[in-house]
Image (cartoon, rainbow, N blue to C red; front, side, top):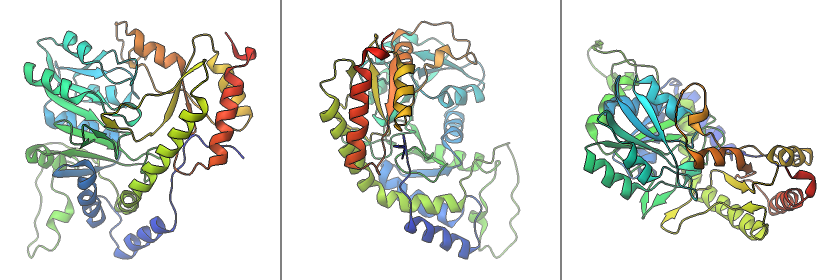
Length: 377
């Protein structure tokens, strides 16, 4: 049987939660189950306000919109990320300005941010790559110095911390993903977090077409009829998915512990392989290990290694994208660190369900294949 690259941890508790939503009769978005989940997730993110959304892309779009990004503006973005980050900037009419990343933890390089600021720059969008938070103290200093807002793409970061502060609370607005490969998941879904009530209120309005959600009108003795004064979107999370997420939040500590156990085992089993550079977890932040990504030596043929691993039933994939090389952005920049990571990263199985035997099988296969002369360039 294949060792899965990623796998959700779901079961009877999630099924019971879904059954309760079915019995309630409220399955649609922004209902009672969403409110319960939002209250729970606020404790995880360390913020006063949480808005459950249909996915992280919609949360990014909402966050950028309420922060004021628009046509003619520039938003500085860490280049090494899934393109939803850059897409969301484009959806507002602003232009993503991609800058290079740190070679060790792969998040946005603060020095590159400072060098990219122009009179059109309105904000900085940092990505917590594979869950490990970016350098928010340095980024905040830069943002404050230049009068910019700061946003955290925490898609992979539920449960992570930076200098003791939880991911989600590290910027003016943060966004999370609950896609099937994330540390906690409902298959799809997302959240926006902030301590600013004005931003949260406008985001909540825009995520329901531009009016208050129906739950806000439930129980009224009158017949309140909302009025539309601006166009929003349908970015609501269903109550079915929210019920799953409420259970997943309670599982988060054990899921994080399991992922950290797997990461520790990989470090032990692969740490002496010269053809690999292992991922770095900095001491001043807690890594949630959404993915475990190896940097292959320049002499190693990644495609050949991936084919060999898959032939042995070990799933793998590339890491994420160097955004600036994607045709959609037409970005005329040279970002060598991000481009190199895009060419050499290889993600191997990482999830909370991995057994010791599976971890050892993966590590043995990786060691044998990457050290073989058959997989050289």
